[in-house]
Length: 74
Image (tube, rainbow, N blue to C red):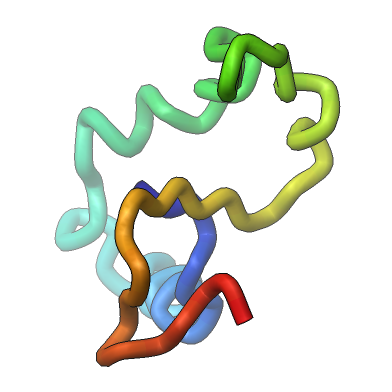
């Protein structure tokens, strides 16, 4: 799961949407704008909600690599 992971795609979407809004309306997406107000992040019994409130990107991985073999752990 990721939130805001690919800035280039997000920017492209943002730039194209005003030109043809009917192509970009998604009911589920429209209802997720305030999702952060309704969820909590608990990991290993610790509530991390306050620590992530100002994050622009949140990636939850349970794999050793992603994005064509990129190692997110260094």
